[in-house]
Image 1 (tube, rainbow, N blue to C red):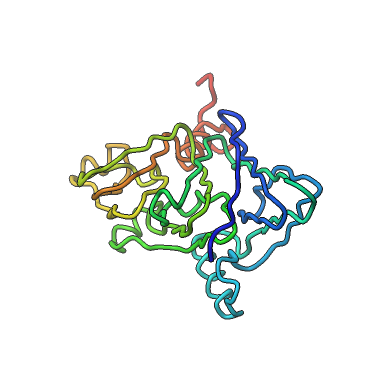
Image 2: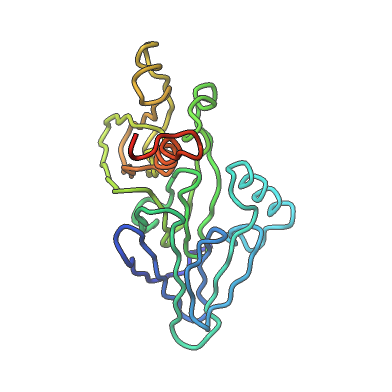
Length: 248
Protein backbone atom coordinates (compact mmCIF):
# COMPACT_ATOMS: atom_id res chain seq x y z
CA UNK A 1 0.00 0.00 0.00
CA UNK A 2 1.40 3.39 -0.99
CA UNK A 3 1.38 6.00 1.74
CA UNK A 4 -0.91 9.00 1.51
CA UNK A 5 0.89 12.16 0.40
CA UNK A 6 0.63 14.74 3.17
CA UNK A 7 2.08 18.20 3.64
CA UNK A 8 3.19 19.54 7.02
CA UNK A 9 4.78 22.40 8.94
CA UNK A 10 6.75 22.35 12.19
CA UNK A 11 5.64 25.06 14.62
CA UNK A 12 7.77 26.29 17.53
CA UNK A 13 11.27 25.64 18.79
CA UNK A 14 11.68 23.94 22.18
CA UNK A 15 8.19 22.41 22.47
CA UNK A 16 7.24 21.80 18.88
CA UNK A 17 3.98 20.95 17.16
CA UNK A 18 3.68 19.37 13.73
CA UNK A 19 0.63 20.50 11.77
CA UNK A 20 -0.34 18.11 8.96
CA UNK A 21 -2.36 19.22 5.90
CA UNK A 22 -4.83 16.64 4.63
CA UNK A 23 -6.69 16.80 1.34
CA UNK A 24 -10.16 15.19 1.25
CA UNK A 25 -9.83 11.44 1.79
CA UNK A 26 -6.25 11.62 3.10
CA UNK A 27 -5.37 10.14 6.48
CA UNK A 28 -2.59 10.16 9.04
CA UNK A 29 -1.97 7.75 11.93
CA UNK A 30 -0.65 8.73 15.35
CA UNK A 31 0.13 7.36 18.77
CA UNK A 32 -2.77 7.61 21.21
CA UNK A 33 -2.91 10.89 23.11
CA UNK A 34 -0.58 13.04 20.98
CA UNK A 35 -3.23 14.99 19.02
CA UNK A 36 -3.02 18.71 19.82
CA UNK A 37 -5.82 20.23 17.71
CA UNK A 38 -7.82 19.52 14.54
CA UNK A 39 -10.25 21.32 12.28
CA UNK A 40 -13.92 20.40 11.98
CA UNK A 41 -13.52 18.40 8.76
CA UNK A 42 -11.21 15.89 10.47
CA UNK A 43 -12.76 12.65 11.74
CA UNK A 44 -10.78 10.31 13.96
CA UNK A 45 -11.14 6.69 14.97
CA UNK A 46 -9.11 4.49 17.29
CA UNK A 47 -8.15 1.23 15.60
CA UNK A 48 -6.10 -1.84 16.30
CA UNK A 49 -3.20 -1.65 13.86
CA UNK A 50 -1.59 0.96 11.64
CA UNK A 51 -3.80 0.36 8.59
CA UNK A 52 -0.83 -0.37 6.31
CA UNK A 53 -2.42 -3.66 5.23
CA UNK A 54 -6.18 -3.17 4.61
CA UNK A 55 -6.60 -6.91 3.96
CA UNK A 56 -5.12 -7.90 7.31
CA UNK A 57 -7.46 -10.18 9.27
CA UNK A 58 -8.31 -10.18 12.97
CA UNK A 59 -5.44 -12.52 13.85
CA UNK A 60 -2.95 -10.30 12.08
CA UNK A 61 -4.26 -7.22 13.90
CA UNK A 62 -4.05 -9.02 17.25
CA UNK A 63 -0.47 -10.11 16.47
CA UNK A 64 0.51 -6.55 15.57
CA UNK A 65 -1.15 -5.21 18.72
CA UNK A 66 0.64 -7.82 20.83
CA UNK A 67 4.00 -6.75 19.45
CA UNK A 68 3.20 -3.12 20.28
CA UNK A 69 2.35 -4.17 23.82
CA UNK A 70 5.88 -5.59 24.14
CA UNK A 71 7.30 -2.11 23.49
CA UNK A 72 5.09 -0.58 26.18
CA UNK A 73 2.99 1.32 23.63
CA UNK A 74 -0.80 1.38 23.46
CA UNK A 75 -2.48 -1.53 21.67
CA UNK A 76 -4.32 0.99 19.50
CA UNK A 77 -3.50 3.80 17.10
CA UNK A 78 -5.63 6.79 16.20
CA UNK A 79 -6.48 7.32 12.52
CA UNK A 80 -7.32 10.88 11.42
CA UNK A 81 -9.08 11.35 8.07
CA UNK A 82 -10.18 14.46 6.20
CA UNK A 83 -13.88 13.91 5.56
CA UNK A 84 -14.61 17.57 5.00
CA UNK A 85 -14.42 19.91 2.03
CA UNK A 86 -11.06 21.30 0.99
CA UNK A 87 -7.80 21.05 2.90
CA UNK A 88 -8.07 20.40 6.64
CA UNK A 89 -5.45 20.40 9.38
CA UNK A 90 -4.60 18.23 12.36
CA UNK A 91 -1.67 18.84 14.71
CA UNK A 92 0.38 16.62 17.00
CA UNK A 93 2.69 17.47 19.89
CA UNK A 94 5.34 15.41 21.67
CA UNK A 95 4.61 14.60 25.36
CA UNK A 96 7.88 16.18 26.54
CA UNK A 97 10.13 19.13 25.52
CA UNK A 98 12.28 18.46 22.52
CA UNK A 99 12.28 18.30 18.75
CA UNK A 100 10.00 16.73 16.14
CA UNK A 101 12.00 15.16 13.31
CA UNK A 102 10.21 14.96 9.91
CA UNK A 103 11.44 12.03 7.81
CA UNK A 104 10.61 11.54 4.13
CA UNK A 105 10.69 7.75 4.07
CA UNK A 106 10.99 7.58 0.27
CA UNK A 107 14.22 9.61 0.40
CA UNK A 108 15.64 7.52 3.25
CA UNK A 109 15.31 4.12 1.59
CA UNK A 110 11.82 3.25 2.84
CA UNK A 111 12.87 1.91 6.26
CA UNK A 112 13.80 3.67 9.49
CA UNK A 113 14.63 1.93 12.76
CA UNK A 114 14.09 4.10 15.85
CA UNK A 115 13.74 4.04 19.62
CA UNK A 116 10.58 2.30 20.77
CA UNK A 117 8.98 5.47 22.17
CA UNK A 118 10.03 7.94 19.47
CA UNK A 119 7.26 7.38 16.88
CA UNK A 120 4.75 10.25 16.86
CA UNK A 121 2.72 10.15 13.63
CA UNK A 122 2.92 9.16 9.95
CA UNK A 123 0.98 9.16 6.72
CA UNK A 124 -1.50 6.31 6.39
CA UNK A 125 0.21 3.35 4.75
CA UNK A 126 3.27 3.47 7.01
CA UNK A 127 3.92 0.14 8.71
CA UNK A 128 4.91 0.39 12.37
CA UNK A 129 6.63 -2.78 13.60
CA UNK A 130 9.21 -3.79 16.20
CA UNK A 131 12.80 -4.99 15.93
CA UNK A 132 15.11 -6.55 18.53
CA UNK A 133 18.78 -5.99 19.25
CA UNK A 134 20.89 -8.95 18.14
CA UNK A 135 22.77 -9.25 21.45
CA UNK A 136 20.00 -10.27 23.81
CA UNK A 137 22.28 -10.68 26.85
CA UNK A 138 23.63 -7.16 26.69
CA UNK A 139 20.19 -5.91 25.70
CA UNK A 140 18.64 -7.00 28.99
CA UNK A 141 21.18 -4.84 30.81
CA UNK A 142 20.88 -2.04 28.32
CA UNK A 143 17.20 -1.29 28.83
CA UNK A 144 16.82 1.41 26.18
CA UNK A 145 17.93 0.15 22.80
CA UNK A 146 16.99 -3.49 23.37
CA UNK A 147 13.60 -3.21 21.68
CA UNK A 148 13.36 -0.86 18.69
CA UNK A 149 10.61 0.24 16.33
CA UNK A 150 10.80 -0.21 12.57
CA UNK A 151 8.93 2.17 10.26
CA UNK A 152 8.38 1.15 6.63
CA UNK A 153 6.75 3.14 3.86
CA UNK A 154 7.21 5.82 1.20
CA UNK A 155 5.51 8.78 2.88
CA UNK A 156 6.18 11.22 5.70
CA UNK A 157 6.83 10.03 9.24
CA UNK A 158 7.43 12.11 12.35
CA UNK A 159 9.48 11.04 15.34
CA UNK A 160 10.00 12.84 18.64
CA UNK A 161 13.29 13.37 20.44
CA UNK A 162 14.62 15.28 23.44
CA UNK A 163 16.86 18.33 23.24
CA UNK A 164 18.85 19.06 20.09
CA UNK A 165 18.98 16.64 17.14
CA UNK A 166 22.29 15.74 15.52
CA UNK A 167 22.29 13.88 12.20
CA UNK A 168 25.43 11.87 11.45
CA UNK A 169 26.28 10.40 8.05
CA UNK A 170 28.36 7.22 8.28
CA UNK A 171 30.37 5.86 5.37
CA UNK A 172 31.67 2.50 6.52
CA UNK A 173 32.40 4.05 9.92
CA UNK A 174 31.54 3.11 13.49
CA UNK A 175 29.76 5.36 15.97
CA UNK A 176 29.25 4.56 19.66
CA UNK A 177 26.74 6.38 21.86
CA UNK A 178 24.61 6.08 24.96
CA UNK A 179 21.69 3.79 24.17
CA UNK A 180 19.18 6.43 25.27
CA UNK A 181 20.65 9.07 22.95
CA UNK A 182 19.79 7.12 19.81
CA UNK A 183 16.74 8.38 17.91
CA UNK A 184 16.93 6.28 14.74
CA UNK A 185 18.94 5.11 11.75
CA UNK A 186 18.48 4.11 8.12
CA UNK A 187 19.07 0.83 6.33
CA UNK A 188 22.73 0.05 5.80
CA UNK A 189 23.49 0.65 9.47
CA UNK A 190 24.20 -2.37 11.70
CA UNK A 191 23.01 -1.83 15.27
CA UNK A 192 24.43 -3.61 18.29
CA UNK A 193 24.81 -3.22 22.05
CA UNK A 194 28.16 -3.71 23.79
CA UNK A 195 29.10 -3.87 27.46
CA UNK A 196 31.43 -1.19 28.82
CA UNK A 197 34.90 -2.65 29.36
CA UNK A 198 36.51 -2.36 32.79
CA UNK A 199 34.85 -2.58 36.20
CA UNK A 200 35.94 0.95 37.15
CA UNK A 201 34.39 2.49 34.04
CA UNK A 202 31.22 0.47 34.57
CA UNK A 203 30.78 1.51 38.22
CA UNK A 204 32.12 5.07 38.28
CA UNK A 205 32.06 6.32 34.70
CA UNK A 206 28.49 7.59 34.90
CA UNK A 207 27.78 6.47 31.33
CA UNK A 208 25.88 3.27 32.09
CA UNK A 209 26.84 -0.36 31.60
CA UNK A 210 26.28 -0.56 27.84
CA UNK A 211 26.77 1.50 24.70
CA UNK A 212 24.98 1.38 21.36
CA UNK A 213 27.30 0.65 18.43
CA UNK A 214 26.29 1.69 14.91
CA UNK A 215 28.39 0.67 11.93
CA UNK A 216 27.96 0.87 8.18
CA UNK A 217 26.77 3.37 5.60
CA UNK A 218 23.71 5.49 6.21
CA UNK A 219 22.21 8.15 8.48
CA UNK A 220 21.92 8.22 12.26
CA UNK A 221 19.81 10.64 14.31
CA UNK A 222 20.99 11.42 17.86
CA UNK A 223 19.19 13.32 20.65
CA UNK A 224 21.12 15.43 23.15
CA UNK A 225 18.69 14.95 26.06
CA UNK A 226 16.75 11.67 26.19
CA UNK A 227 13.65 11.90 28.35
CA UNK A 228 14.89 9.12 30.65
CA UNK A 229 17.98 11.19 31.50
CA UNK A 230 15.87 14.30 32.12
CA UNK A 231 13.48 12.33 34.35
CA UNK A 232 16.39 10.89 36.37
CA UNK A 233 17.76 14.37 37.04
CA UNK A 234 14.34 15.67 38.09
CA UNK A 235 13.79 12.77 40.47
CA UNK A 236 17.30 13.12 41.90
CA UNK A 237 16.57 16.75 42.82
CA UNK A 238 13.02 16.32 44.09
CA UNK A 239 13.01 16.73 47.91
CA UNK A 240 9.69 14.88 48.24
CA UNK A 241 11.34 11.82 46.68
CA UNK A 242 14.53 11.99 48.74
CA UNK A 243 16.46 14.23 46.34
CA UNK A 244 18.30 17.44 47.10
CA UNK A 245 16.61 20.82 47.02
CA UNK A 246 18.12 23.80 45.17
CA UNK A 247 19.59 25.31 48.33
CA UNK A 248 21.44 22.19 49.46
